[in-house]
Length: 296
Image (cartoon, rainbow, N blue to C red; front, side, top):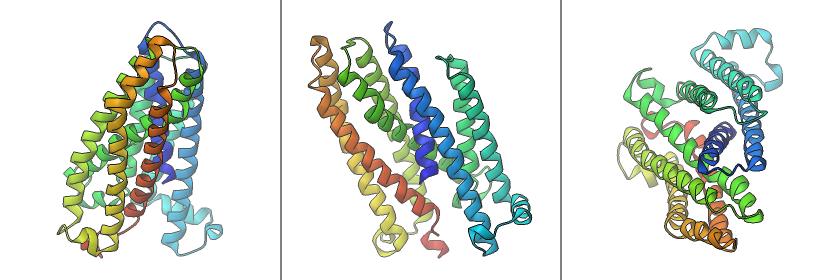
């Protein structure tokens, strides 16, 4: 869960920083600086979580405790497909961290952000090779769809989390910037909607791939976890729909009169959505570590 959550946070912070820059001539340096630092923290957490996952996998495959893994075991594990994919992912994250730190003194520009985004996309691809989809082949439709699903989820979850806990709290307590906030909300809402559409399509494909019959949603342990995940996705969708059609328009309009009262309901709903999405990520992590019904 921590791997996917930190990846989503990093993607969301990167995207939010870009949307704020494009919003207007006003430049909210404080909130953009917070996004830049939080993006760096997200990458570091993703590195640590990936390393811990790698360590646990090595110990599990050797059937030893975590503290019993020595250099020989690490080298042997690194020679496996799982190990090579894990090391490649760690290398991509370290490179992304170095580039982010190099550009942390200010807004580094679109090329910089695109390069970091590309590294994060490649890291997500390395994660997909560790899952069930890779069993269908490295260039199979299952792998491509699983990668797209992971990236769509990172965009959606990251957008919601950074907006709920960094961007909107800043604007709800700062001097009104009537032209900037609506532009940010429009970009965030559009991208979140696009990501949600992608999640629905790729999620439907994955469900069709792993379940032989819809009844397995309630007759198997795997199906129950998947059903729980889908239920919290529905909660998040309902929260997002409220903000898109009611909360955000009110929040944007409130700044025309420098009145931040209408921002608070949108912020509360978005935080509820972010909590629901954390449950979704947890369920996704459980599913990744579990065998589908057909493989049981």
